[in-house]
Length: 273
Image (cartoon, rainbow, N blue to C red; front, side, top):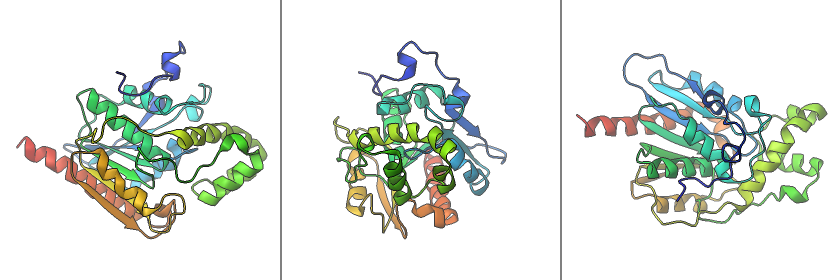
């Protein structure tokens, strides 16, 4: 069984993308052993949006950023059609020297993060922890469908603006909008239909779930059920705000994330002490 669903460009005869274009590496500056935080963007998002996190994370945490097809250096690749088109290249491109890997996703990125964690577990190198932000548990149906195939460009832009997380200036500029809308449509189409139907408690790593108390897209009760996918300990944190709650509380959010990363790294160190 494939750890991640196939149908990615890499499996269709197209050249595999360069690993450094799929997973950006922004290392910390501290001496000694580092943990690694892999961040998977939201629907329509890209690695650029999360690069500023580097300045707010501890120096002993290496930041790895996933870049999906259809954006950045991967702009000319076929647009993704299934979750495996997003997760598969990430798994294949992770640096071999990434230590104490923690995988984090926001919104649809949490589903990609789950698939990456599941694939790594099946490959015998599970992550130290998984962090899911503002997303339903992967076995639940999407509670807030976008249906991009039924929306014109203006309607889709309105739906994106209602969720937040995307620079309105990009969406309001016709030439830029023409560039970004195809990948946004593709991502939302994947997010609409994705639903994990495999075995329960497929992971064994610790899990942290974070969401916004006023999130209109993902209600808190949908967050709580993430605990059912892992045999490890699970924690739920709810912060004030909507679907992109962390944008107004970034320092607090990243402090929470850094603590989860360092807890996972510390647990590993204690195991091998």
